[in-house]
Image 1 (cartoon, rainbow, N blue to C red):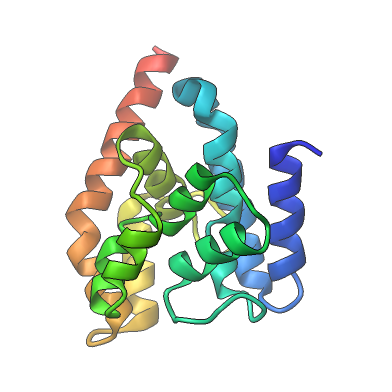
Image 2 (image 1 turned 90 degrees about the vertical axis):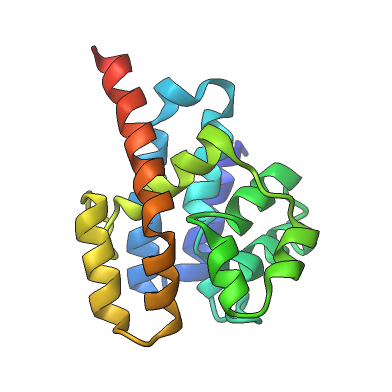
Amino acid sequence: MDLLAWARDLTEQLLAEPLPRKWAHSQGVGRRAESLAGILGEDAELVAAAAWLHDIGYAPAVAATGLHQLDGARYLRDVEHADPRLCALVAHHSCACIEARLRGLASELATEFPPVGGLLADAMSYSDMTTTPDGEITDWDGRRTEILGRYGAGSLVFDYISEANPMIAESVRRVSERLSAVRA
């Protein structure tokens, strides 16, 4: 089975029944990442697979720490024996280091999974943060507003997204510029 088929199947298995909205979001994020193949080169399949898998840490069978990025990456490493780069992309998607710090899990995240930066990290943020919870395409402003409204002021996720806002906005901008250049 190829990497993308495996990632899609595993995500469906873990999310479709217990968390159908997360499954819908993951499908949209996966498709969004697949559309970036023209700018990702040889890493296109890896990023797309990570995008499909990015929220498996929410699955009841996987969730352990409250930091879904870390839980998902640990599951991929420990249960699925996945490629370390795939695990790291899941572990660090969408500025997870900020949420990890707020949850007191920053050292675990950084020690267990070295961050992947550059275009691959940007592509993960872009794919996740320009996709609605229902799997539809949106822009970062709309997604940020939706997240902040869903969680509300004073919540940990509200604080995480507020702090991550400039970094995510930059990631989205960089990917959007690359996509525009390829299309031109």
